[in-house]
Image (cartoon, rainbow, N blue to C red; front, side, top):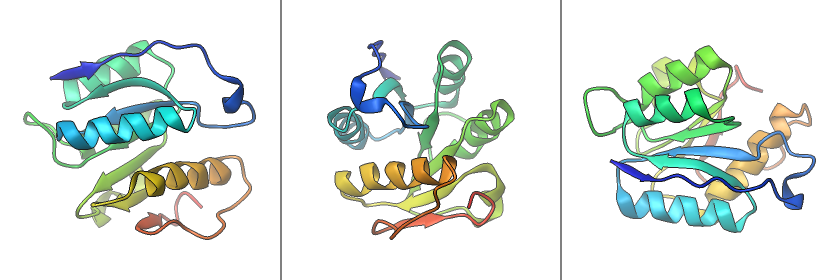
Length: 152
């Protein structure tokens, strides 16, 4: 299922950020909506919100995406781990947002935000990852966020 595609201009709030455009890969509609809403309110552009691998790949192939946030469990045969592999091949950082962080694929992502999470924790986690990607290092981590050593 494809929840929506938003093509907006980059806002002034996005200046100086490494992360401006986010792809949300989440199979729970209410969680997907909450994530998208929180990110938009924080000034991020949403490339799309999708619930399966095939749609995620189409968006990554057709859009400039700065970060993928992906649940591990998705609709269909492929998982968020498969999405992370594809994003990793393209050089796009991934934040897993899931109930059980997959330790065996830490090399594919910059970190993991544990579910359930507060929308503020998601925004704060992305801001923390943005700082790391810009070489500024992580400050205090938001509740539920684990950064992977490979990313720091």
